[in-house]
Length: 95
Image 1 (cartoon, rainbow, N blue to C red):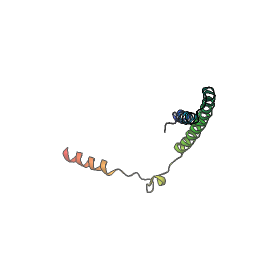
Image 2 (image 1 turned 180 degrees about the vertical axis):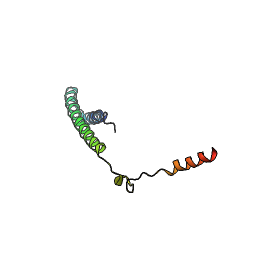
Image 3 (image 1 turned 60 degrees about the vertical axis):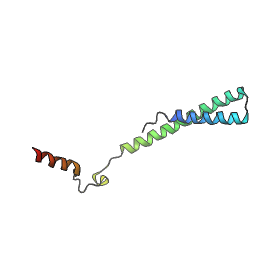
């Protein structure tokens, strides 16, 4: 999973919400600029924290070792797909 865009998405969403709220409440421009700065910085930090947490959890999930029993194999034997065995049968008939 790509998590590079998560901080930007969080910041853009917070900025959009801040614009709507400031328009509805008719804030002054100086207050809007100051508030927008702090909102974007705060939610940028929050986005990076979310990204780091997701990266750690994804790395843990990818590092798990799976055994043959986890994958559904019986006694560790590898079963071939039916499609590949059928293709092999058709090739041997045509040759």
